[in-house]
Length: 223
Length: 223
DNA sequence: GCAGAAAGTGGACACCATGTCCGGATGTCG
DNA sequence: CGACATCCGGACATGGTGTCCACTTTCTGC
Picture 1 (cartoon, rainbow over the protein chains, first blue to last red):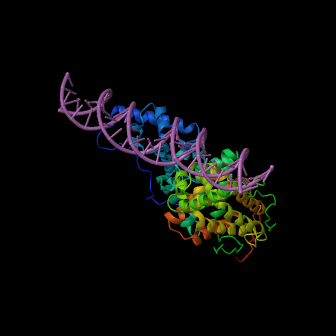
Picture 2 (picture 1 turned 180 degrees about the horizontal axis):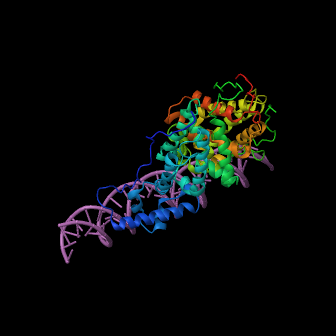
Picture 3 (picture 1 turned 60 degrees about the vertical axis):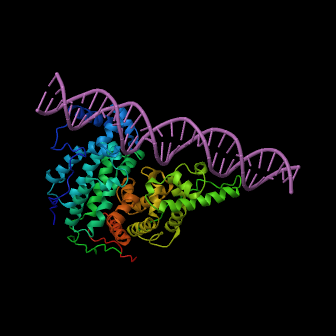
């Protein structure tokens, strides 16, 4: 009951929407502009409110026309997503194949705590991008959310938690970028403290030995 | 240690931004238009995507000029907030002075579970307004969030939870309207199931006898 | 009642971002 | 080196924003 294994067929992030497919080779100027655009977007998102970055602004910063942006990305959010892709993929790999407790092998509660810590790290480093990428409902449609959701749901199921399907979104909610921004910058808590709080939450919710102790606490049946 | 009491000096919602203050009386045409605007906004938010309701749309629906809207409300979100005010105030009153377990008197875990259930009820009934009112960071700046935050923090402190200050925002995160919308409409879960999941979470996190792991069971308070 | 003052109203305006189109420039391949 | 496909970016139409100001409605004091 203890070894949480993430199912193999988890949804993994696809290629970038640009899709440098196998078909025709990408032209040199196109590649140059793609790099320019991404670099410029990184700067633009970093300075100022990521939530109201405009295509115009990125185009100006990159020194290209707006139509060039629209050729590949429909909106600023998708550019932020493209920038995040690599980082999220790396983290997904650590979850799937890395060492415990983030990777397979540890108890579900410990794995969830480690996952929380890793996500806090990601948010700390790339908050501006996550804020830019996940405007409201887009968060749930994103490929990354599907992966995290499947992972945490598997941990919940492995720990024998009641109704993992409905609890999983509640446990992912504290990782919404707006929540982290509030805790981190409005309230001023250091990342370690936020991660520690979430870790405590994880261990309390996913008590794997729920019936293993002497005290016969009736499982909290929901009303 | 069990009786959770909410501090008396909780921040309570102020008057509506219109501020029908003591100063000059509100003119008849102004009152008439205010009612028109609110009724129209209710309709507009209810039909379609609350996140992209525009001042133009509300003005047209109300049959008034845009400048009339701008006189009182700076943006659509503040109109939605005004519409929510009454409902949230009523719920705040039940939390402060109503019967247990939502009001004072029950164990912290039970009170949090009841609070979750009440919020799910509010979200179910007025989701379109909450979605319209809380665009990203505005959620945390709103007066209502301050109230819920103080309440839940008091419950955490009363249960002896470690670092309530940092945990409280994580426990409020599942109530973000976007999260509820996803669970309710993308995934199709009924409100009762969502409330039950949150109730289980509440009882697990707020185990009042946190240090005594041997025999302490949460009191079997019936709902 | 009535006139004047104050408050309220809404059409008009300038600004900005969006998303698309097309003439021209730029690579790539034969 | 020339032809062709691809790509670029200025220009345009659209729609929302927020403000200004001339006009109308209501309230108050005489």
